Length: 306
Ligand SMILES: [Zn+2]
Image (tube, rainbow, N blue to C red; front, side, top):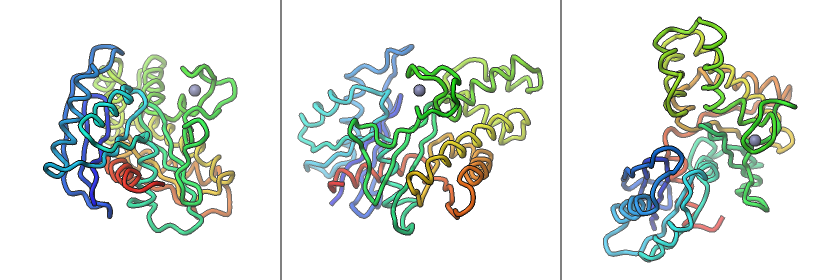
């Protein structure tokens, strides 16, 4: 049996037809226009892109099971579900971060780790999102926020967060934090190269973060330092959770992690080890590249009740 997995991203829909053993049978990507500012996509455009993706991937003439993974800011999820059910698809909804955690657990870099199967998969982007698996089960929690670690207190009395609290993890260890740190450093010092300086002052967070990471990969000292600092914060924050949750697997993933690689992962690993202290051979792993963990995870969740 196969299912169609769909991931909603800002500006595009990524889909795959996936067999129940995790084999990807086909892929499809559909762009949709995103409105200016924060108005987001029009419902009709997003719905049309999702329906087109499902139709491109399902077996001809057959009703499919659809796993729909979304990032909370994309929104419009209830209407999408309605639209898909209108074309007679069974729809399973999951946050992209939790789908990714399940994908890493079942088919990705956490597959086969020793019991107890307690793991945390952290998706790093403009925000930090998490997925938690305890004793082999995905934790959704009483309020649907299970595994969401972005707003854990990280620095007492620290930077103001849009959630209303101060010092959240998100404000120190996300791609947004990297961009803000780099912009602040540009104001305080003139040490960053001119090309980088011009490129990071404006633009969407994801694109600017990619630009900084690219500069770091190319050896720009300031960009390297800023990216490493984000890695240290990630390792420190995740490390604090290792013992309380008795984690036997920890994954960092997302396109930001894919792009930065060891520039981010090495300081994150060192900081996590220091934070956890002795007694651990726990490895901080890089997740499957791209969106595959999400697509494989949401497929399995849609085909099997977990
Ligand atoms: Zn917050």
